[in-house]
Length: 432
Ligand code: UDX
Image (cartoon, rainbow, N blue to C red; front, side):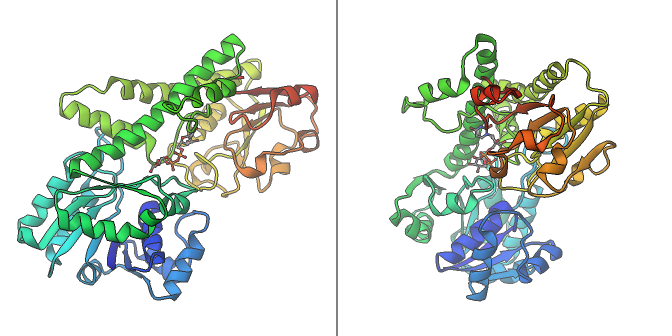
């Protein structure tokens, strides 16, 4: 099939490359000329394991075309995926849909034959209706269908999540369009993916409800971890015991810093705004948002205690600052609150992240990027393991820091408390 993907961010570029890898011809469009130039020179605008290989092989095979010419791409395609950003709007907590609606207007101008328009961006319930209204102002209804097909891609595992999804959700009120999407995803369904068709609004809500539930699961475990610390219980054992119940499931029960990323914080806020709009108070999700935000301060209070309330002039090393491993994404990462907090208290912060230096800390005095693990740990008072990158999982701490009395705060529970104690380390972790 001939597909147009609008937006070459985490969702658009991964989806476009994977659709091409299934044998389709895909026009990937972005209004950012620089991004399109990079892609035409085989440089990736985002950090996603395996993406460069799949993009270049399909680009070389002529199945991937990168362009800023949205009109041409729409005219050359049968299915048009809207994958533009829907960031949290500054004023309220709702999703900002201006990119979605501006793309819908351009689509309207370029529909010359039957097209299926698919919202893959995460959009509030009833956005599909609004897109349909925009297009039908100038285009006959029989010439287009608007369907919802939300993505469930995790950063750092996006290719795997696309190729082996638990489920493909399509929200469509039209049989012909549903059939077309089913054909498009057939190769994945053949490999065992569930294909679930619901109404358009149903699919829009499934996305938000899923992300809000996962965020709730994480915050729930983070609060249980707080109780574990007070009662001398190991939260990982609680997670195992709970997860053996198929109704709970063993994934997303890892207590940690606070959830971050571009989705959970944005989507939890957006769904509560949708709830308020429809006079339905989503009080549980509202409390999750508060709990997650409060957690960052709570962990900083713990750092204060670990440093016996003397933060000024203390040297603190951060191992990892991204919101999760295998990504360079800093959006809503808990380090964005933790590092400035400690810096304001007079600490000297060194940080190392495999994805490189962060512009977010560039202007902060006494916050320095180090190029490797050994330099970031040299002579520090406290090592904080913030992100569970693979290379932090088997460190020889004794060798890493000359000062014997350094402490370790393992915010991702990468090490065993007993083993660390046996080795004589001053070791702290989460919920254990
Ligand atoms: C999430 C959803 O998983 C994905 O389905 C959706 O499409 C986009 O949002 P992502 O934000 O990329 O994906 O990463 P994810 O792996 O879900 O982690 C989100 C945050 O939760 C990270 O900060 C991570 O550290 C945290 N997390 C995750 C935990 O603290 N504990 C866990 O057990 C799992």
